[in-house]
Image 1: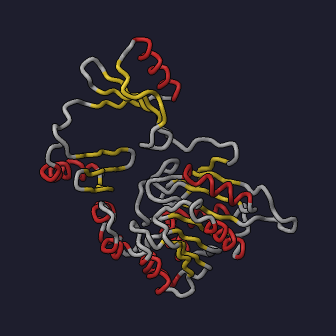
Image 2: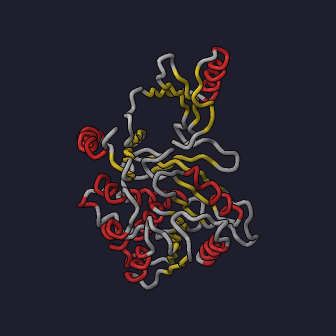
Image 3: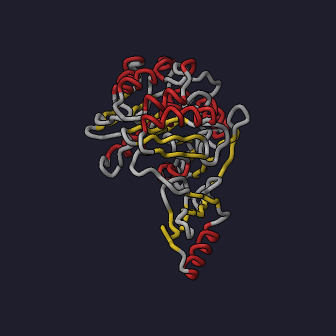
Length: 352
């Protein structure tokens, strides 16, 4: 579009009733998303004048076959067949027809792919939701242990169980049975993403399922998954959670709106979290109801979810521990702070 400010009211009126919401906003672009669909609007001159058509293929082999045909026929190839980052398992080739219209053949995962080192599971959540994930069995256990401790691992917003494989492998090596779950609304699970409203109840149900395979259950979450873990630990249950490790969680959604400088957060909250759900989705409001050992891990350079969110949780419940990671931003890499993961493992082992 040539003028983003002028175009946005129209597109908002069109897309919002269809379930789209703004997940990223910058001066020259807006990123819209809903379950299974994404639209990127950006400002430029001249405006887009062609149509881009995307067709879903049944397999990668079908994409490769079309690509080979394009080379044989000497069609215009804009992008060769390759993996791309747009969605889990996204694999496509992009061609141009004689008029220059872009045609993309795409194969993307419809479910979590099978793995050799883990069992692909689909377990019941609540409200009829089914949760997909990977179950990693312990590869080593102390000889005096009959049943392993269990850990449910939860990803951040926009990711799924495929992003948790490394954690499942590491936990299994340490003797845990690890359930790496896609939250409702993400790949492998049914339902609609709800930003922490019923997702914690799904995790309580998943914990009951895992207890048939483990003597106790702890939770490990990242970003939104950490938010969900804290909310789940505060839920009343006949079988309480054993321990929680929450990496850079959002604790107070209302305060987060004012604290973060990351573009798009205000719009994200406005479009996806109704005012009447704001308190229910904020762990700060149930912090005192978390009675299990709880460790927060947060970088002091996090601008997405400022560390003030974790400080607020500690202020609300002095039994909660906070491990500050100096210089770390949101979703920091463990190879840059190599001691952090080992400390997480120690905390889970000590409280298993």
